[in-house]
Image 1 (cartoon, rainbow, N blue to C red):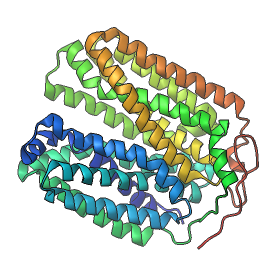
Image 2 (tube, rainbow, N blue to C red; image 1 turned 30 degrees about the vertical axis):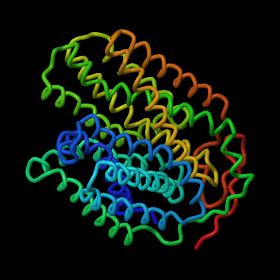
Image 3 (spheres, rainbow, N blue to C red; image 1 turned 180 degrees about the vertical axis):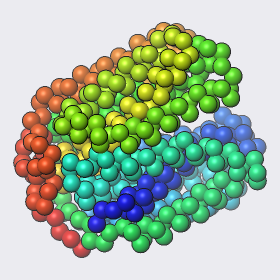
Image 4 (cartoon, rainbow, N blue to C red; image 1 turned 45 degrees about the vertical axis):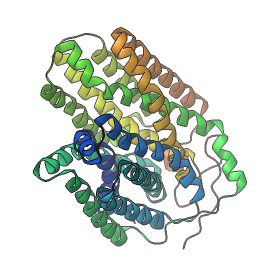
Length: 407
């Protein structure tokens, strides 16, 4: 069932999502020239994808909760590849926007089933490590997507970047058809089970993740301008400096499982990692010398790289029979929180630089307090007791899971 080949296929699948979302960063001017607009108008191609992703994730998670994971992942990969192949043929920017919306829907249909499949196949005590390996794919896409897109655009034109993405999507689809397991659980979810989405043991980690992820990513997106303002770095130097964050992310993805094992309990590991992120952000945002700022940026990435798979594993364990819908709602909440926090952070960074530190660190402190409260209120049994061959024990934080049925 679970193997490194399957992990590689899932990591490649989410790599496409990370690359497809961030590859437009260096392409705004070529896209604007192609569609007869401005780079600001072309930036709507990024926003359209993000809005569609946030809006579609919970809808798809609930509407297709009865579908086997294999079918939904394959359908999403094929839709993603088709969208990337057709977008270069768009005659107007309006058509391109519609296609980017379709790409956002495909991304929303892919991410949650991938991590829900991990929750189905991997024992709870190993889920954080498995999710960290797969999350490494997203990290790779975010870091390398803009690089490859820029190189292909310089060598040929912007259409080549989307063509390469389409070919990659079809290749990953073929590999997924071979390695995705048949007979993954198909769960019959009752209306009573859907009501569990409103229970506090699920709402607490959902809200906590939206807050800390929104704050940490919003701060990172502004980190280049902060470095430029504080230390007078040139654009090329800023790019090299912020790449340290991506390196940290990858290291954090790999460190997530060992850190959780060291701290024994997932509800203990998450606050510890959030504290690390807050400390790294404080070192970066408070004026210091360049070496400390760069080290803090890398440490910031390490913390975020650990926190993402740890919190995803926590949500999957709390979800009972609903890992797909819960993880889809989480993805939507994360994106909406980022969209709400980023404009505030950008305005503060432009007008009152000291205030951005107060804003972002205040959000991280709130998330840390919520995480500590959640760990205290949730009397979670040892991880080994969860999601073994039988059903997890019923408790206030782990809704009883009905027997799985298989195709």
